[in-house]
Image 1 (cartoon, rainbow, N blue to C red):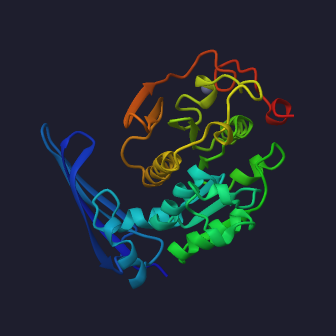
Image 2 (cartoon, rainbow, N blue to C red; image 1 turned 180 degrees about the vertical axis):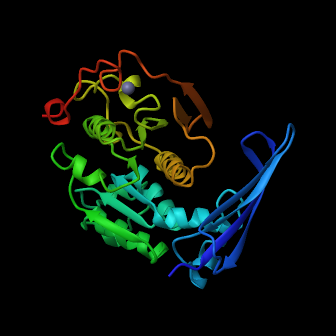
Length: 314
Ligand SMILES: [Zn+2]
Protein backbone atom coordinates (compact mmCIF):
# COMPACT_ATOMS: atom_id res chain seq x y z
CA UNK A 1 0.00 0.00 0.00
CA UNK A 2 1.45 3.34 -1.04
CA UNK A 3 0.24 6.42 0.67
CA UNK A 4 3.19 8.61 1.52
CA UNK A 5 3.96 11.52 -0.76
CA UNK A 6 5.92 14.71 -0.73
CA UNK A 7 5.93 18.09 -2.28
CA UNK A 8 9.45 19.35 -2.67
CA UNK A 9 9.64 23.05 -3.32
CA UNK A 10 12.91 24.26 -4.65
CA UNK A 11 14.28 27.59 -5.56
CA UNK A 12 17.69 28.09 -7.02
CA UNK A 13 19.91 31.07 -7.16
CA UNK A 14 22.84 29.01 -8.39
CA UNK A 15 22.22 26.82 -11.39
CA UNK A 16 21.48 23.21 -10.46
CA UNK A 17 21.79 23.83 -6.75
CA UNK A 18 18.82 24.49 -4.57
CA UNK A 19 19.20 26.89 -1.71
CA UNK A 20 15.91 26.08 -0.06
CA UNK A 21 13.66 23.07 -0.05
CA UNK A 22 10.97 21.71 2.18
CA UNK A 23 9.01 18.49 2.44
CA UNK A 24 5.27 18.49 2.95
CA UNK A 25 3.60 15.16 3.55
CA UNK A 26 0.55 14.62 1.37
CA UNK A 27 -1.52 11.56 2.10
CA UNK A 28 -3.00 9.60 -0.79
CA UNK A 29 -1.66 11.83 -3.53
CA UNK A 30 -2.85 10.71 -6.98
CA UNK A 31 0.60 11.40 -8.43
CA UNK A 32 3.58 9.12 -8.59
CA UNK A 33 5.91 11.80 -9.76
CA UNK A 34 5.23 15.29 -10.99
CA UNK A 35 7.61 18.15 -11.53
CA UNK A 36 7.02 21.72 -12.54
CA UNK A 37 9.95 23.97 -13.13
CA UNK A 38 10.54 27.65 -13.75
CA UNK A 39 13.67 28.95 -15.30
CA UNK A 40 14.84 32.42 -16.18
CA UNK A 41 18.18 34.13 -16.62
CA UNK A 42 18.71 34.62 -12.88
CA UNK A 43 16.12 32.37 -11.32
CA UNK A 44 15.36 28.71 -11.32
CA UNK A 45 12.71 27.08 -9.18
CA UNK A 46 9.59 24.99 -9.09
CA UNK A 47 8.09 22.06 -7.29
CA UNK A 48 7.85 18.34 -7.53
CA UNK A 49 5.43 15.86 -6.04
CA UNK A 50 6.74 12.40 -5.30
CA UNK A 51 5.07 9.36 -3.93
CA UNK A 52 7.30 7.15 -1.85
CA UNK A 53 7.37 3.36 -1.71
CA UNK A 54 6.98 2.95 2.00
CA UNK A 55 5.08 4.46 4.86
CA UNK A 56 7.08 5.46 7.91
CA UNK A 57 5.31 4.64 11.13
CA UNK A 58 5.12 7.04 14.06
CA UNK A 59 8.12 5.49 15.79
CA UNK A 60 10.23 5.91 12.64
CA UNK A 61 9.10 9.49 12.13
CA UNK A 62 10.20 10.28 15.64
CA UNK A 63 13.41 8.26 15.51
CA UNK A 64 14.52 9.91 12.26
CA UNK A 65 13.08 13.36 13.03
CA UNK A 66 16.45 15.12 12.86
CA UNK A 67 16.99 13.66 9.40
CA UNK A 68 13.47 14.35 8.21
CA UNK A 69 13.53 18.04 9.10
CA UNK A 70 16.87 18.46 7.35
CA UNK A 71 16.34 19.80 3.81
CA UNK A 72 19.11 17.58 2.45
CA UNK A 73 17.41 14.42 3.73
CA UNK A 74 13.68 14.82 4.36
CA UNK A 75 11.20 11.95 4.31
CA UNK A 76 12.27 11.06 0.83
CA UNK A 77 15.91 10.77 1.87
CA UNK A 78 15.07 8.71 4.93
CA UNK A 79 13.19 6.31 2.69
CA UNK A 80 16.29 6.01 0.52
CA UNK A 81 18.35 5.16 3.60
CA UNK A 82 15.81 2.58 4.75
CA UNK A 83 15.90 1.01 1.31
CA UNK A 84 19.72 1.19 1.20
CA UNK A 85 22.07 -1.77 1.57
CA UNK A 86 25.61 -1.31 2.85
CA UNK A 87 28.22 -4.04 3.32
CA UNK A 88 30.66 -3.47 6.15
CA UNK A 89 33.80 -5.58 5.80
CA UNK A 90 35.74 -5.75 9.06
CA UNK A 91 34.44 -5.14 12.58
CA UNK A 92 37.54 -3.69 14.21
CA UNK A 93 38.20 -0.04 15.04
CA UNK A 94 36.98 1.33 11.70
CA UNK A 95 33.98 -0.98 11.47
CA UNK A 96 32.88 -0.25 15.03
CA UNK A 97 32.06 3.40 14.54
CA UNK A 98 30.91 2.89 10.95
CA UNK A 99 28.50 0.14 12.03
CA UNK A 100 27.01 2.12 14.88
CA UNK A 101 26.35 5.18 12.70
CA UNK A 102 24.94 3.11 9.84
CA UNK A 103 22.52 1.51 12.30
CA UNK A 104 21.58 4.81 13.91
CA UNK A 105 21.02 6.44 10.50
CA UNK A 106 18.51 3.74 9.57
CA UNK A 107 20.36 2.03 6.74
CA UNK A 108 17.74 -0.62 6.07
CA UNK A 109 20.12 -3.51 5.43
CA UNK A 110 23.67 -3.74 6.71
CA UNK A 111 25.83 -6.78 5.97
CA UNK A 112 28.68 -7.41 8.42
CA UNK A 113 31.67 -9.54 7.44
CA UNK A 114 34.29 -10.76 9.93
CA UNK A 115 35.64 -14.16 10.91
CA UNK A 116 37.27 -13.12 14.20
CA UNK A 117 36.15 -13.30 17.82
CA UNK A 118 36.29 -10.42 20.30
CA UNK A 119 39.41 -10.27 22.48
CA UNK A 120 40.18 -8.10 25.49
CA UNK A 121 42.76 -5.95 23.67
CA UNK A 122 40.15 -5.03 21.01
CA UNK A 123 37.99 -3.13 23.46
CA UNK A 124 40.30 -0.10 23.75
CA UNK A 125 39.07 1.02 20.29
CA UNK A 126 36.45 -1.40 18.92
CA UNK A 127 33.48 0.25 20.57
CA UNK A 128 30.80 -1.87 18.92
CA UNK A 129 31.84 -4.81 21.15
CA UNK A 130 31.44 -5.05 24.92
CA UNK A 131 33.43 -6.70 27.69
CA UNK A 132 30.86 -9.46 27.99
CA UNK A 133 31.37 -10.24 24.27
CA UNK A 134 34.97 -11.44 24.76
CA UNK A 135 35.30 -14.79 23.02
CA UNK A 136 32.13 -14.29 20.93
CA UNK A 137 32.17 -13.87 17.15
CA UNK A 138 32.50 -10.19 16.24
CA UNK A 139 29.63 -10.44 13.76
CA UNK A 140 27.32 -11.55 16.57
CA UNK A 141 28.31 -8.86 19.06
CA UNK A 142 28.11 -6.22 16.31
CA UNK A 143 24.68 -7.45 15.21
CA UNK A 144 23.41 -7.41 18.78
CA UNK A 145 24.71 -3.90 19.43
CA UNK A 146 23.47 -2.46 16.13
CA UNK A 147 19.99 -3.90 16.68
CA UNK A 148 20.04 -2.52 20.19
CA UNK A 149 20.70 0.93 18.68
CA UNK A 150 18.07 0.42 16.00
CA UNK A 151 15.79 -2.66 16.01
CA UNK A 152 14.13 -1.51 12.78
CA UNK A 153 16.97 -2.50 10.44
CA UNK A 154 18.13 -5.82 9.01
CA UNK A 155 21.61 -7.13 9.75
CA UNK A 156 23.01 -9.85 7.51
CA UNK A 157 25.79 -11.73 9.28
CA UNK A 158 28.73 -13.32 7.43
CA UNK A 159 31.03 -15.02 9.91
CA UNK A 160 33.91 -15.39 7.52
CA UNK A 161 36.85 -13.48 6.16
CA UNK A 162 36.52 -11.92 2.72
CA UNK A 163 38.30 -14.20 0.25
CA UNK A 164 38.74 -14.33 -3.49
CA UNK A 165 36.14 -17.13 -3.52
CA UNK A 166 33.38 -15.27 -1.67
CA UNK A 167 34.14 -11.59 -2.43
CA UNK A 168 31.98 -11.11 -5.53
CA UNK A 169 29.00 -13.03 -4.15
CA UNK A 170 29.17 -11.11 -0.85
CA UNK A 171 29.20 -7.65 -2.40
CA UNK A 172 26.77 -8.24 -5.25
CA UNK A 173 23.57 -7.45 -3.33
CA UNK A 174 24.81 -4.23 -1.73
CA UNK A 175 24.70 -0.62 -2.91
CA UNK A 176 27.89 0.54 -1.17
CA UNK A 177 30.84 -1.28 0.37
CA UNK A 178 32.87 -0.09 3.36
CA UNK A 179 36.41 -1.44 3.53
CA UNK A 180 37.08 -1.44 7.27
CA UNK A 181 39.74 -4.16 7.11
CA UNK A 182 43.19 -3.95 8.64
CA UNK A 183 45.39 -5.68 6.07
CA UNK A 184 46.60 -4.96 2.57
CA UNK A 185 45.53 -8.23 0.95
CA UNK A 186 41.90 -7.56 1.96
CA UNK A 187 42.07 -3.94 0.83
CA UNK A 188 43.36 -4.85 -2.63
CA UNK A 189 40.84 -7.69 -2.88
CA UNK A 190 37.95 -5.31 -2.06
CA UNK A 191 39.26 -2.71 -4.52
CA UNK A 192 39.51 -5.29 -7.30
CA UNK A 193 36.22 -7.05 -6.54
CA UNK A 194 34.38 -3.71 -6.40
CA UNK A 195 35.97 -2.67 -9.69
CA UNK A 196 34.85 -5.83 -11.49
CA UNK A 197 31.39 -5.68 -9.85
CA UNK A 198 31.09 -1.90 -10.43
CA UNK A 199 30.31 -1.29 -6.75
CA UNK A 200 31.19 2.02 -5.08
CA UNK A 201 33.28 1.70 -1.94
CA UNK A 202 35.03 3.60 0.80
CA UNK A 203 38.64 2.64 1.39
CA UNK A 204 40.26 3.46 4.72
CA UNK A 205 43.47 2.59 6.46
CA UNK A 206 45.29 3.45 9.67
CA UNK A 207 49.02 3.68 10.25
CA UNK A 208 50.48 4.88 13.52
CA UNK A 209 49.00 8.33 14.17
CA UNK A 210 47.39 8.80 10.77
CA UNK A 211 44.23 7.56 9.15
CA UNK A 212 43.32 7.92 5.50
CA UNK A 213 40.25 7.37 3.40
CA UNK A 214 38.99 7.78 -0.13
CA UNK A 215 35.79 6.91 -1.93
CA UNK A 216 35.84 5.15 -5.29
CA UNK A 217 33.10 5.06 -7.91
CA UNK A 218 34.36 2.44 -10.38
CA UNK A 219 34.54 3.70 -13.95
CA UNK A 220 34.21 7.32 -12.83
CA UNK A 221 36.89 8.17 -10.27
CA UNK A 222 40.43 7.22 -9.33
CA UNK A 223 40.62 3.76 -7.78
CA UNK A 224 42.71 2.38 -4.92
CA UNK A 225 45.23 0.94 -7.37
CA UNK A 226 45.55 4.30 -9.15
CA UNK A 227 47.19 5.45 -5.89
CA UNK A 228 48.71 2.26 -4.48
CA UNK A 229 49.62 0.02 -7.39
CA UNK A 230 50.20 -3.17 -5.45
CA UNK A 231 50.42 -4.40 -1.87
CA UNK A 232 53.71 -3.83 -0.05
CA UNK A 233 55.74 -6.95 0.76
CA UNK A 234 54.35 -8.92 3.72
CA UNK A 235 55.76 -7.49 6.96
CA UNK A 236 56.98 -4.28 5.26
CA UNK A 237 54.36 -2.17 7.04
CA UNK A 238 53.93 -2.77 10.76
CA UNK A 239 50.42 -3.42 12.10
CA UNK A 240 48.76 -1.69 15.04
CA UNK A 241 49.57 -4.72 17.20
CA UNK A 242 53.25 -3.78 16.73
CA UNK A 243 53.05 0.01 16.77
CA UNK A 244 50.08 0.77 19.04
CA UNK A 245 47.18 3.04 18.19
CA UNK A 246 45.09 5.73 19.85
CA UNK A 247 41.63 4.22 20.03
CA UNK A 248 39.65 7.16 18.71
CA UNK A 249 41.70 7.45 15.48
CA UNK A 250 39.90 4.59 13.67
CA UNK A 251 36.69 5.84 15.31
CA UNK A 252 36.99 9.17 13.47
CA UNK A 253 37.86 7.54 10.15
CA UNK A 254 35.11 4.89 10.44
CA UNK A 255 32.60 7.64 11.16
CA UNK A 256 33.68 9.41 7.96
CA UNK A 257 33.24 6.15 6.05
CA UNK A 258 29.65 5.87 7.32
CA UNK A 259 29.12 9.48 6.24
CA UNK A 260 30.34 8.60 2.72
CA UNK A 261 27.89 5.68 2.55
CA UNK A 262 24.98 7.82 3.74
CA UNK A 263 25.83 10.67 1.34
CA UNK A 264 26.14 8.22 -1.55
CA UNK A 265 22.72 6.71 -0.79
CA UNK A 266 21.16 10.16 -0.45
CA UNK A 267 23.03 11.47 -3.50
CA UNK A 268 23.97 14.65 -1.71
CA UNK A 269 27.07 16.74 -1.16
CA UNK A 270 30.60 15.95 -2.23
CA UNK A 271 32.08 12.50 -1.85
CA UNK A 272 35.76 11.97 -1.06
CA UNK A 273 36.47 10.90 -4.62
CA UNK A 274 39.66 11.68 -6.54
CA UNK A 275 41.33 12.60 -3.29
CA UNK A 276 42.85 10.95 -0.26
CA UNK A 277 41.81 12.46 3.05
CA UNK A 278 44.53 12.11 5.67
CA UNK A 279 43.80 12.75 9.35
CA UNK A 280 46.66 13.15 11.80
CA UNK A 281 45.44 12.58 15.31
CA UNK A 282 48.47 14.17 16.99
CA UNK A 283 48.45 17.37 14.92
CA UNK A 284 44.65 17.38 14.69
CA UNK A 285 45.00 18.08 10.98
CA UNK A 286 43.00 17.00 7.94
CA UNK A 287 44.78 17.03 4.57
CA UNK A 288 43.11 16.42 1.22
CA UNK A 289 45.62 14.97 -1.22
CA UNK A 290 44.25 15.20 -4.77
CA UNK A 291 44.62 12.00 -6.79
CA UNK A 292 43.87 11.35 -10.44
CA UNK A 293 42.85 8.35 -12.48
CA UNK A 294 46.21 6.89 -13.41
CA UNK A 295 46.65 6.07 -17.09
CA UNK A 296 49.03 3.30 -16.02
CA UNK A 297 46.68 1.91 -13.35
CA UNK A 298 46.92 -1.89 -13.43
CA UNK A 299 43.17 -2.11 -12.76
CA UNK A 300 41.14 0.75 -14.23
CA UNK A 301 43.31 2.05 -17.12
CA UNK A 302 42.49 1.40 -20.76
CA UNK A 303 44.96 -1.49 -20.90
CA UNK A 304 44.88 -3.04 -17.44
CA UNK A 305 47.21 -5.86 -16.40
CA UNK A 306 44.62 -7.16 -13.91
CA UNK A 307 41.71 -8.60 -15.83
CA UNK A 308 40.65 -11.47 -13.61
CA UNK A 309 40.02 -11.40 -9.87
CA UNK A 310 40.87 -15.02 -9.15
CA UNK A 311 44.04 -14.97 -11.21
CA UNK A 312 45.36 -11.94 -9.34
CA UNK A 313 44.44 -13.10 -5.84
CA UNK A 314 45.30 -16.78 -6.14
ZN1 LIG B 1 42.75 2.75 -11.05
